Image 1 (cartoon, one colour):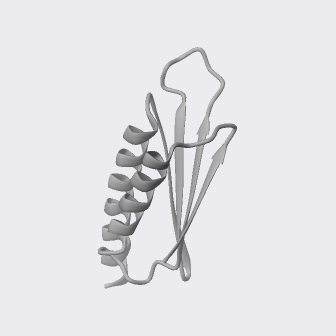
Image 2: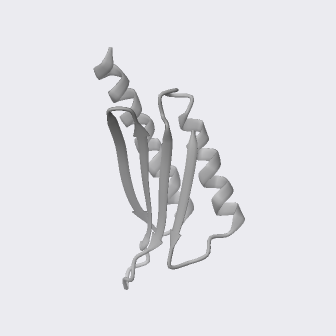
Length: 97
């Protein structure tokens, strides 16, 4: 699976990039049909503290899965987004069966 990470309006630390790669690679255990993942990390201009956004799109032939989460930290957003994608992959596989 190919992993594309795009950070908008900031430079991510290597620890964050490693975390994203690790979490996305774990999603491969749920389906071997995932071709590519596109991760967008961005900071929303806001007065609130929960302005870190993680958007993940999994490219699967015939169907893409997408999730967007906003939290106070990128790490938390990545965790929640990948948890949601795990559920989406399981539901998608059940529909195929």
